[in-house]
Amino acid sequence: MADSTLLESELRLAGRLDTRFFALLQAIADTGSINRAARTAGYSYKGAWMLLETAGNLASEPLIETATGGKGGGGSRLTPEALALLRVWNKLQAANHNFLREQEAWLNQLPAVAGLIRRIAMKTTARNQFAGTIGTIEPGPVTTQVAINIAGGQQIVATMTTAAADRLKLAAGKEAIALVKSSAVVLIVDFAGYALSARNQFPGAISRVERGAVSSLVILTLPGGSSLTASVTNDAVDALGLAVGMPATGVFKAYSVMVAVAAG
Image (cartoon, rainbow, N blue to C red; front, side, top):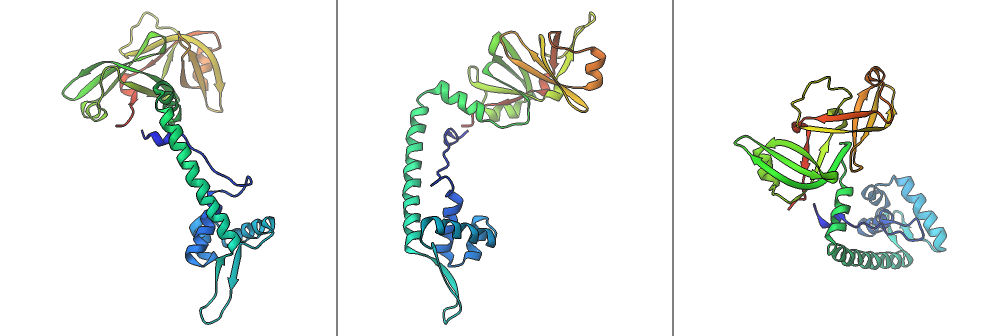
């Protein structure tokens, strides 16, 4: 995971002149055509003109000079005021990038905080995400079993191909994130004397039920404060009488666990 993702900053002038606007100015300077520049910057021709006219009115000076016909044909160019504005923007952008690099270097000297930011920044549809460290690794010729120690002294077991484990360069003590889709979690309120083969079984108490049109999200609070979310049909919620405060066990297979580690 690249360190550059830790910090981002969008520079704006006067609250409305942003990267896209100055990309439009630069494209006009490069192409001499508002039509081509608008396409480059992602504006419609009309939208580009409206923005340039509004900015010109606020600046009390036109930003664009246009010429029609003539021996050299028509075209558009930036006025001295627009060129000065573009130069200031480029200087501010360079200073902003230097500032971010300096702060990034400082932040990377705080590995615990930097690691937390990276974990939070990860975007995925998996509802359940647990940060921890790799405990034991049991490699096999085809599959490898990995145990991840998470908060509350609990452990999640994941099974993956040995090729995937080698590609991730898994090692004991390495930080990892276990991801489990809510649809892969089964809630059990009564084992009725049976034992299950699923490696991951987490007893807790139902803390929230978010009912939808067809299914509900049932949130189970585990010892230590972590939450496990299961996607359950509304019929099952009604049949089991699932309600806040009820004890339940969240169960999911080791094959349902995806493991993420920092790249590099």
